[in-house]
Amino acid sequence: MDDFVSTPAEQRGTGHVDKMAPTSPSAGESMEGSEGDNALTIIRQELSQISAQMLTKVDTGNLLHEFRTAVREEISALLTDLAAVEVRVDALETEAQVCRNQHWATGLVTTRQGNLLLTLRRQVEDLENRSRRQNIRIRGLPEPDWGDWWGPRDTTKSVDLTTDGAAGGLVGSWGVLSRALRIWTNNVRGLNAPERRSHLLRSLWVNRASIAFLQETHFRGSDHPALRDSRFPTGCFANHSSTKKAGVAILFARHILFCCLETKGDPNGRYLFIKGTIADRRNTFASIYAPNTSQHRFLSKTLKLLDHFREGLLIVAGDLNVPLDLRMDTSKGRISHSDLCRRVTHNAIRAAGLADAWRILHPEDKGFTYYSPVHRGHSRLDYILVAQEFLHLLQTCDI
Image 1 (cartoon, one colour):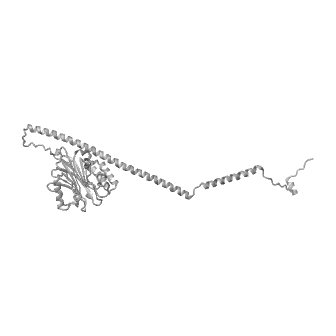
Image 2 (cartoon, one colour):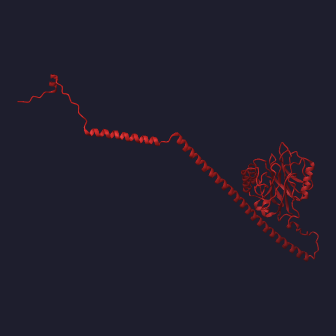
Image 3 (cartoon, helix red, strand yellow):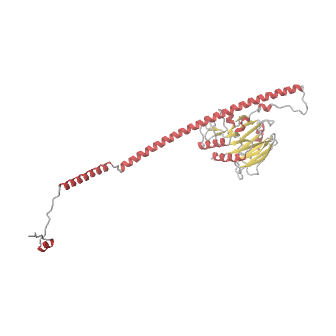
């Protein structure tokens, strides 16, 4: 007999419904739940530790302050080291300049000794020629003049720095010249009064100046008083176009056969360039009066203009209004000008191939051309600069 199996439809028809009894969780599921709770607990603990270790705003500010303080201290130490290095560099530059000056001075002494030997040789030859002529002076045959070979018989005198300004003398000797060439520079502080002009020309003649470089003539425009006489008949001027201030000039003594070829003057009366010939040799002369401020900019620009103008022997003289050597050119070892101004001026002069004539011949001496009643100190502001290739022609230079 077949077994009877009721179908779901039949069961629904009879109203019988099978219900599933609730089942209890197994052991594996219980273990998984406890492990998850433990992991969450560990994560919460680690997050709490991380939160505790995180810096607060106060801690962050303190660390930032410490960092800034450390950086400032490092920068201050670096600046101190740089200042020490700069001082050392300045000292080395000064020592190098002293060595160069001593080298030039040694070369000048050697040149002088050679000139003296040449003079003695020529004198011996002259004595032999005189003996052949039986010491008879023949008309039309000039006797040799040896005075200039021994240098000048007198040197440029010192001047009263507080009243007459500054003056310096330079003597150079060319074989083609019959006499020595003497250069004079002076800050005259105004020449509009006739007695001042007369006194200046007389002083130049007494000091046997060949070429005079003048600053602060205070002439205005082209209509200015005459500054010449029979002893100094030739002169060139660069005056301020509208006011009686600044102004520079160059005067030539009558025994200097100077032929002017070209001139270049500043409309503000700050510089004057002259190019010409003496005994068929090209020469360039420049008279400069620097302003009281920004001297380094003015001199750098002026010397660049002069470099394009110059030809042959170059002599620059004037009032630079700044001492070149802080230790040697000031009485107190300090100046009111900035160190940058002094250094740029010194470098501009060196780049132009010029050398301080007085410092070359007096490497260890102190000489001053100006007294400042405000600072109560002396300084050397007036210079005669000579092209380095002609330094062997120097004989004397005095203040």
